Image (cartoon, rainbow, N blue to C red):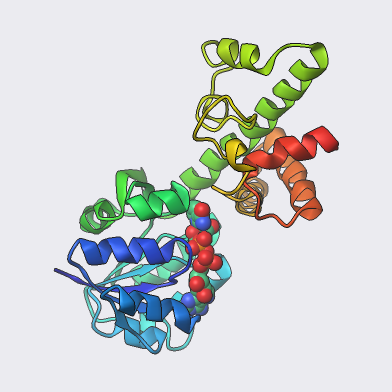
Length: 295
Ligand code: NAD
């Protein structure tokens, strides 16, 4: 099986790397946090002592980093990925970052003759652990086909979204829908309460009629209506409010850059910003209903 260099072994990267080990890939990991690298070693992976060390022997390099700033530094910086890989290495960035940085880094890789895809994910830590992530992939047809087998070890749904950067575009458009819909579902339940309409009744009606959406039927912010939703465990994340705010801000950056009109996306970003400021941001994003109730 191919040798993978995995950079960024955090909440998402670690279980993804562990699934590659289960899938018989050889994984050499690097993280600024040495304890994370040690945990990978405990699970059968190898330790890299530097970025270059993770890249030297790799046939595939995967990155799972916090933001565009780290992705730029890790790929383009001195001693970074592009300076350290062997000819023919395939590059996959699964971090959620801004579209512009994603396109610039892919271009820099291509200029040096390397195939690269942006492949952000949805499904959260639970999806990473269960290898059921959805990968939204931007890149050439050839790069996508090369990336598919390794992505299939970490995810269930692998979608080619088009040219470089389109994986990130799909991710932020999807999460803009999600952020807006979670707010409006919460608002509807709060209005129903004021009007004396029972939450169960609204759920029974809206989940079967034109108000139906994922935020209502799969991730309902009101406790007791959808057993698996974080509302039933005191809004323990899940997908944190801070992560939702990050993605809504990325969507607004992209909207400004392209002069797209997104008033509800802008509103959702502002509401989540106030929510995160009023809490520690680590609560699940569906906890927005508690903020709206108090606001
Ligand atoms: P995390 O903060 O837990 O992990 C990031 C890891 O990268 C950390 O261990 C950190 O030490 C390491 N790192 C940072 N800079 C580095 C560098 N220069 N070299 C090597 N390692 C470095 O974050 P996460 O929750 O694993 O998220 C990773 C990415 O996945 C983010 O872009 C996030 O938006 C995206 N994402 C997260 C979730 C989720 O539910 N957590 C869901 C979907 C997408």
